[in-house]
Length: 46
Image (cartoon, rainbow, N blue to C red; front, side, top):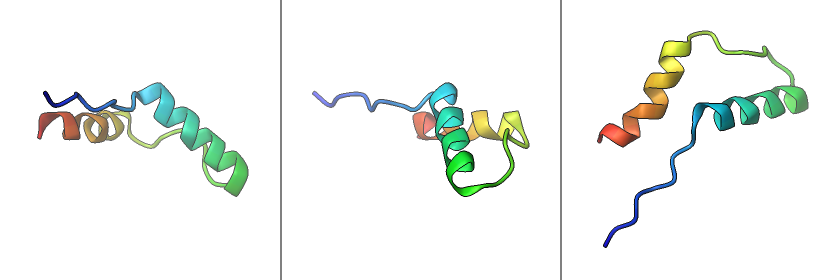
C-alpha cells in the first residue's frame, strides 16, 4: 500500500522562510496569505 506523503504545514514553511531571511536578507512575512495556503494545498489535490 502506498504511504501518504508528509505534507509541509504553514507553520513549518513560515519558519523555514524566516530562517532564510535571517541568513540571506529579504522581507519578512508573506505578501498574500491566500496564495501561500493555495500553494500548500495544491499538491494534495492532484
